[in-house]
Amino acid sequence: MTTETKQEPLVDELASAISKVHLDQREIDSPKSLREAADLILQAKNILVLCGAGVSCAAGIPDFRTPGTGLYDNLQKYNLPYPEAVFELTFYAKNPKPFVSLAKEIWPGFKHKPTLTHSFLSLLADKEKLLRTYSQNIDGLEYLANIPEERIVECHGHFRTASCINKRCRTVADAEVVKETIVTKGEVPKCEKCNKYVKPDIVFFGEDLPERFHSLLSPDLRKADLCLVLGTSLQVAPVSMIPDMVKCRRILLNRERVGTFGKKDVFHAGDCDDSIKVLAELLGWQDELEQKHKEAHASIGKEDSEKSKTTATK
Ligand code: CNA
Image 1 (cartoon, rainbow, N blue to C red):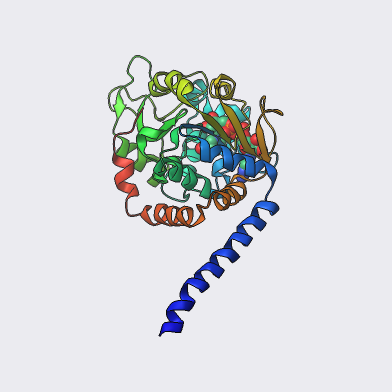
Image 2: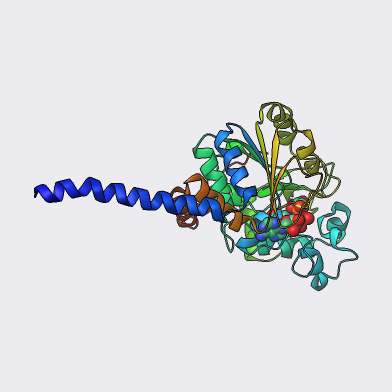
């Protein structure tokens, strides 16, 4: 009995020493860029995150521009005059089928689930470090990863609301009916009032960004003490300009160096989820991250239909 109680602290001490050696070894093994990123994240209180299609690739949604696998290289089946046409209003008014087929493919809450990177952003919110995540993605995975709604700006819109494309009408459509028409029937939704096409409130080329983007960006730029950019080619303005507007340190986790990211910044080349995994280890957050990720995946299916019905932030 006595020997047992005496040995326990010793065993604990040994276990803690061994795990410390492991942690130190991990720190030595991990890339300098990610160690630097972990330090910056630990110090930060108001992280402004900017993410793009690369964040969702691990969920099975292709990005735009990666040669071979990107959407722009795989739209032949839609017979488009040029790839960007799928997101153009004048083209949609004449030929809505390509966008509707694409929308059916990526409609949130069916085939695709949040990635580890999405769950990491949700963990940043739990730790009260996430000022805002500005996402260029339209897949709603930030939302499904349980990042609090007030922390998300979906810069290019989302599928939770829809409206008539006729400028003189603009009637708000019943989102559930639009979802059913596109996802279940594979048909093009039409306006109840004027019979012109309805489209989910995804921002097409030439359309203005949601009011929420404009009202939150300036104060967020002033408040941000770290800017974390993930999985984007930074080619679509105005969102691509955000990293040049912040006054704080910047981290880029992407397959390639993009925009104006240079020597003063932290850049780690690779897939987001791989980088995030190492970052979480360095931060000592891996168990919490795993838990968060499991919870997000478990809640989809149960909650999603409810979530997709809720009024969205626009
Ligand atoms: P993009 O121009 O296709 O660039 C993607 C960037 O991410 C490239 O630099 C890639 O090298 C990089 N990348 C690809 N996979 C990974 C990965 N696993 N880890 C890290 N980096 C990776 O896409 P952007 O987001 O920059 O362009 C903005 C467009 C894309 C927005 O208007 C979106 O609406 C649109 N988009 C959204 C989705 C989505 O919602 N998931 C998918 C495809 C396109």
